Amino acid sequence: MSIDEHERLMRANQENWDARTPVHVASRFYGLEQGLDPARWFAPFEWDDLGDLDGRDVLHLQCHLGTETIAFAQRGARTTGLDFSPASVAAARAVADRAGLDVTYVQANVYDAVEALGERRFDVVYTGKGALCYLPDLLRWAQTVSRLLRPGGRLYVVEFHPLLNSLGVKPAPGPGEGSELLLRHDYLGGRGPVHRDATYTYTDGPAVEGVRDSYEWMHGIDEAVNAVTEAGMTLRRLREYDELPWPRWPRMTRTPSGWWRLPEPRIPLLYGLLALR
Image (cartoon, rainbow, N blue to C red; front, side, top):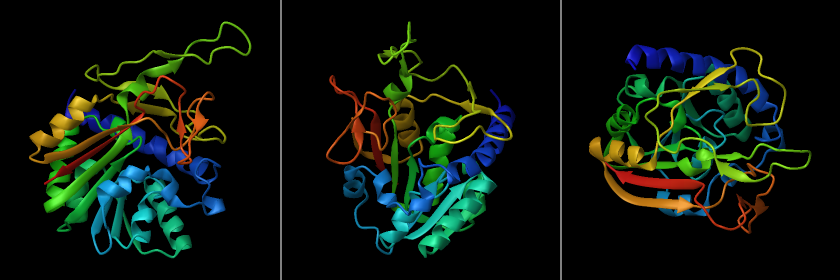
């Protein structure tokens, strides 16, 4: 598929995320009106891997409402968020203003981030938790990240595990049934974009008013690792984790961390990737 076709589908995604934004702003899922701690979106190991951020320049790619972005500012980082949705960027600025935090937000496609940010370079580039599936070309993404990092800078990706995206609920044969999870979707990518009906999003709330078409690309962990190393970065750590920050399926149970996991057998639902330029 050509770059032009990728850009067409990503424009459709941008319009869909513009339409999602008011639904998400009002949702209980994000809880913006409740003033919840943004650190709740981070697994404990993330702060260990990121280290001290005080005085560091941190860029959060595909930041959406900035609910994670402001956690970096709270830890003393000079923080920038970038997203392709103008509606999301406007909402993120409002969130940061209410929190009294100095966060810079830039509206741009992630592939245009170098041009959009000018001469700025960063100590940390962070992305994840539902971001990479909206990028058709991970090598191009990794090359962009490498250009955004200072020498010795860190890329940190914390993303939903491809196994999580492969699971689906078994169709219910009758009322009250259908809680069993099966492998229903591809683990590996390579088949091209997957069209989604985004009339309703992953949050609570009403139907989206506007573009309801969304396109995703499946990426295995090997694709992410190879893109990072081919872009000249050095892989330092790869983690797999069996918890999520919200209960994706009813059968999940709360853990002492406040996150959620599936009953036995334990399987990875999230992965963390740390690389150095």
